[in-house]
Image (cartoon, rainbow, N blue to C red; front, side, top):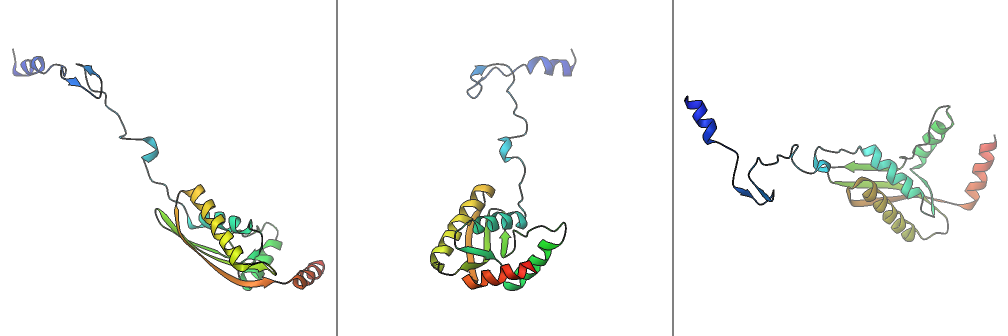
Length: 164
């Protein structure tokens, strides 16, 4: 007999007991791909995605009149009126997104008469809950700049301006 044939006869199936398989003999089951399918690959989330989520969550809080500084609101109003233009839900929101964490800067305008500290607390809670739930990222900080207070008489002037 040749050397190769001799080797094939002596190397038979594994006859040791494999506790993981719960059986003796036969070949071991090979799991292809290595591990849980949910852990295969990498997910990246763009800054703009986090900004949109945070912007919508911040606008949902009572007492937040609008987002952004005066200049960004002016440009946003022009963009909103252009045919095909869309509302900028990211106006007043800046996100820095890492692999597992994110930090947010928000600029808001509050309604006159509301407690600014209560509004900013509610905005933080709502933004953190929405971003962490939807992205799985840890929100390490939400910095909020209150850039203006919307006065009741300002709303009357706005409605007159819109009619022209």
